[in-house]
Image (cartoon, rainbow, N blue to C red; front, side, top):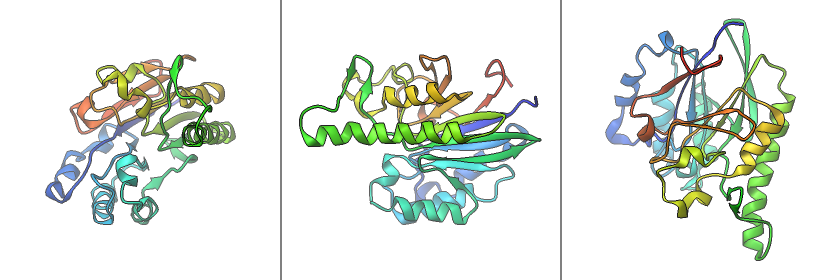
Length: 243
């Protein structure tokens, strides 16, 4: 099977002061990757102006672009408008669903969405107590169930999960332990392990680590820009990350 090269980055936090500058860093990306995944927090405050800037920076690239939004992109309650601006520029935006791309004759399924928090096995919130706590956990559970269903429905050669929040704690190492419950949830990994995938990429944890793995053995990569230290990471859907 043809090897696929997945470029990915999150937490670019674009604002007017960097207009055009990130675009310059994408020059020649088609020689290094077959698709670009954007792992949320594309804006700083989730304003429509910032959303339009994101759409401009990533539009009309020579490879397909698939994105999810992050918590910053939700901040101004304009997430649907921002997603609309991006879709109008040819960018696929996932919202707890999936898309199928055909790359060099290989069918790639990309599933996911923003994700949410709750913590990790042994140190996590549960559906007990106050209504607000139960709603917090139920929201994450609902997202995880949507991902699992979307993955199971994909009939593709390869499957990648794109998220903003982390499915594992390993890629959060370096962040304060106190905020782990607000950086991701074990339920996301549980859903992907159940349905199956080749790779999970996420952002959100600026001080975390790049590499991790789900309990089921699926590779997880934290592609937050501050972690990568480069415009994007490239990961191969093969026996290793090496391209």
